[in-house]
Each structure stands twice: as structure tokens, then as C-alpha cells.
Length: 169
Image 1 (tube, rainbow, N blue to C red):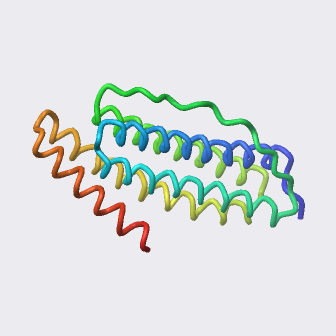
Image 2: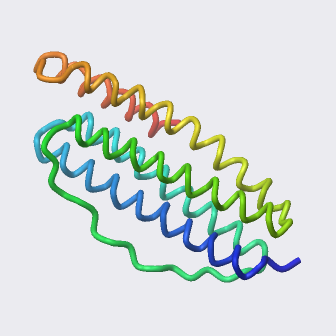
């Protein structure tokens, strides 16, 4: 069965949001690395890869349903940050926005009685619960370290090690 045109458009918009998030995580990674916090940089890169994987998964779903993919342009992300706390706040805010967008998509799929899409989006909702939890904890730790340089260096190392194991998985 064909996807409702409104839903097709919304799914394409979500692909764009995932790619926008990918781009944003790349800028967060670049910022961290530019101030020599390579562990945090690697951590942001793993999140960038996740967003990219989400975009691919959603694209393939749309194509599997016989609908069209229309890739939109992605905007250049913010490149300058005042602190590592701001970097993590930005990352968390992005995850929260993405969750809201998926909720809206889910609502629309239910509205047009597209139960296949409702089912497919369940994976994304579960994923977002996990993403928000992880980023909330990460931000909490970075906030707690605050101006304590040795605490921040220890976290940088810990996040780098975490990123290294994520790549192996």
C-alpha cells in the first residue's frame, strides 16, 4: 500500500533532521578536537555516525514502501562554543528536539492509519529514550566537572575510551 503523501513528506523531513543532527555532531566533534579534547571529539563522532545510520534506516524504510526520497539541503551548524558544558547542552537539546519530531511523525502515522510506519517508528522512539538518557548523564558529568581541569581531563579520557569501544561494536 502507498504511503500517504503527507506522511511521505514528513518522513523525508525527518531524514533531513537526522542528517542535520549528523552535521551538528560533526561540528561538536571538530570543536572538541580544536581545543585538544580528543576524547570528547571521538565521543561526538560516534554520535554523528549514529545519526547518519538513523537517516539511512529511515531512507531505506521509505524506499521499501515504494515512496520517494527527496533529500533537502542541510544547514551549516554552529561552529563556535564557549565551553564543553555548552557543547553537551547543545547535544542534549538536539536529542530532545529529535525525540519531539519523531513523536509528531508517530502521531501523523497513527492519524493516517499507517500501522507499518507506526511499527517502524517504534525502533526510533526506543533509540531516542536511550540517546537522551546517555546524553543527560554525559552532560551531568561535564557540568559537575565544571572548572576542575583534572576532572575534565579524566572525563575526556573516559569518553574517548567509551568511543573506542563503540567503534568496535
